[in-house]
Image 1 (tube, rainbow, N blue to C red):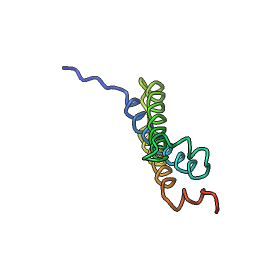
Image 2: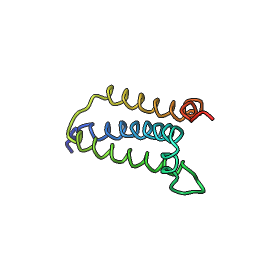
Image 3: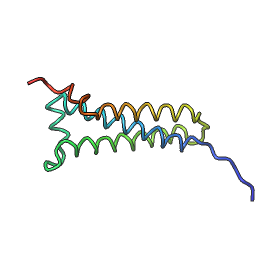
Image 4: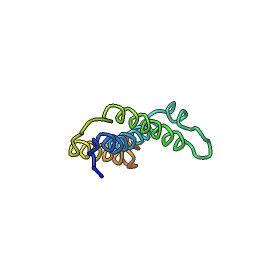
Length: 110
């Protein structure tokens, strides 16, 4: 059986999209703290509060990013170093933005 090499673009797209979704969650967290209007929009299910919207919208961003990157990279060979670096940076941004001292710094002062 002959083994054929497949391009790594679809796999790289999955990794980078995960980073985009993580960064989106961080951004939605900060926006929810910074704006009362966004806080209200994020409250899709009242018992859960704005967390329901933050996670739902982050999943939507992740899926859209995955689909777009997959479409763009499906037949391409992508640099693993670039994909991993971008993924780690985006996950790091998401982690930092969901850290309470960071997102609470954007809350209105009482």
